[in-house]
Every structure is written in structure tokens, then in C-alpha cells.
Length: 110
Image 1 (tube, one colour):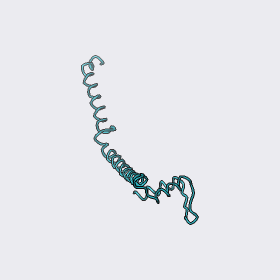
Image 2 (tube, helix red, strand yellow):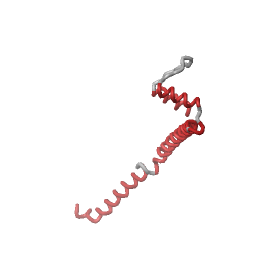
Image 3 (cartoon, one colour):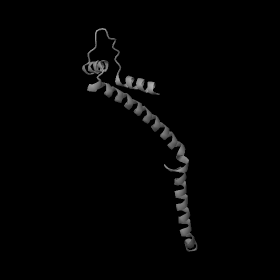
Image 4 (cartoon, one colour):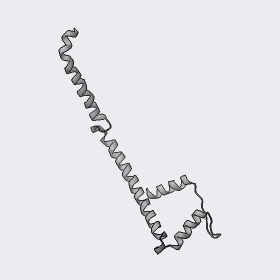
């Protein structure tokens, strides 16, 4: 019986190879059917990029005001107080932990 099937063995192997690569071509990581997942990942990354660009722009403005030629007294005072940890007796100080502050910034940006 095995002798009768020997001529068909290469054809069967080729058929299995075509099926294997066909299935992976459709359902694999870069397959035709995974385009929805890639589109969702792209949207997520674009939103993250937009958030980072906004943050970068904000930091660039702050740096511009801290340069010697255009020093903003208010911004310098704010940074000095934040670094040193002092506050004016007339100031209202609201302390937030890092996670709460990060969540508040994400809510504003989103």
C-alpha cells in the first residue's frame, strides 16, 4: 500500500505547505485578516504621538520663558518654589501624588 502512495507523496507535502502558508498569510501577525488590529494599534499610537507633541510644545514654551533674554519672573518663581519646596504664606497649596497628577493631565489632554 505504501508503494502505491509513493508517487503522491510529493503532491501531499506540497499541498500541506500551501495550506500552512495560506493559513498564516490570512491569520498571521501581518496577515490579511489582522488589518483591524493594526488599525487600532495605529490609532492608539497616533493619539499617544499627539499627546507627546502637545507636551513637547508646552515644554518648549516654558523653556523659552526661562531663557535669559526673555525671562518670565512668574515662571521662574514657580519653578524655584517647586524645586525648593517653599510656598508663600498667602498661597493655597494643593499636593497631589504623581499618579493623580498624571491622570489629571491625561484627562485634560483627552
